[in-house]
Length: 243
Ligand code: FPP
Image (cartoon, rainbow, N blue to C red; front, side, top):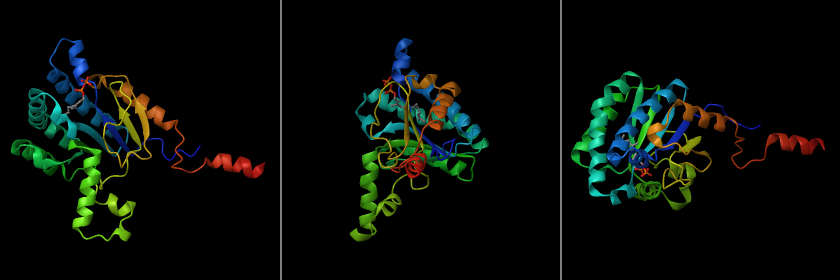
């Protein structure tokens, strides 16, 4: 088997199912998002304990502005609540926080909270938590192209590595493992460029219920995969050569 590493260096998660989780409890959707923050904090800690170096989560997509106004403002206010409740704890645990996405459209308060989270944790190296906020995979590809053009990169010099250097996640290796909770089986415009060779795991678990059991199941699934990156399996080559 050609599997590169049993523990992924980089895990990306679409944290889906908050609304349904709340609805099942006859609670407003915001309650689900609030519990979602707690699930996120548990998951960062569990990933760090397992030696995962990068965790990237989809917290607010470019398309989420189309949700009802009160849900959008609830998610924005949750940023402030989450940063004031958890920043010191995560910083003390060696978590580096980075925000990826278009910050130009968020309020000054939200931008200031994200800036504070990045500044406070900039020296941490145990695990990097990247929060994709006002992020879309297509937005990322377009903004990378815009930056390359603005920098005067000639067309014949623009290859995958060069364009990748302008992408929002240019500081991290591509995700090895992509997890989506909530039962839907799609990428939903998350990290389109970077998931080219990621192993995909879809879980029916609603995000607020995600814990170490579900994480370990996804990691075990990942560890059993044969990652070939477009190559053939080396065992098959050996068999044919010997035949
Ligand atoms: C999708 O569930 C989830 C979101 C759009 C938001 C995810 C946000 C969090 C988990 C909180 C983390 C936030 C911060 C600020 C760090 P959904 O609402 O689409 O669920 P549904 O499919 O059941 O309706």
